[in-house]
Length: 159
Image 1 (cartoon, one colour):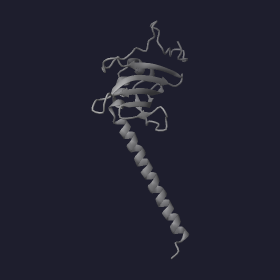
Image 2 (tube, helix red, strand yellow; image 1 turned 180 degrees about the vertical axis):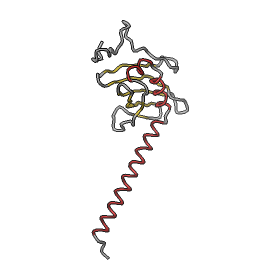
Image 3 (cartoon, one colour; image 1 turned 30 degrees about the horizontal axis):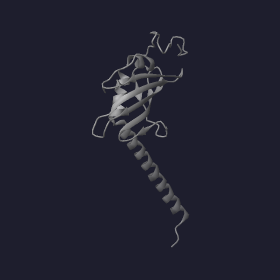
Image 4 (spheres, one colour; image 1 turned 30 degrees about the vertical axis):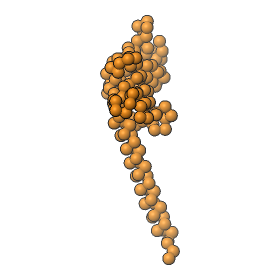
């Protein structure tokens, strides 16, 4: 018994809708899984408590979906590298974070955080973990000569 063309079209449309719905569901599930990791939340907490970063981005700072196609992003059992898009009230940027743990039973330790802002394009390390301890230690956004790394008064972002 032959199937009509209109029935085939309806089957194709319903199949497409189900496929797109499934893809959207799994995309959101992957995003939620990435954001639920302590490597993510610890990095966001460090950034949120960094005065220089909050001054440059502006409060409130909101995270956006991680670009799953970004080749920097890699999460394994013992290491996690993320590029987290951010939006503040003044500027947008990307937080690059490196985290690790000695084994799967231990909690994640954030090793380093770089903040890249747009307009002007600038990237700076705002956090480096101490070599022997996993405790938080934030670095200043000032250079060795105490000049701000971001001079935003003239809009150029350069020292």
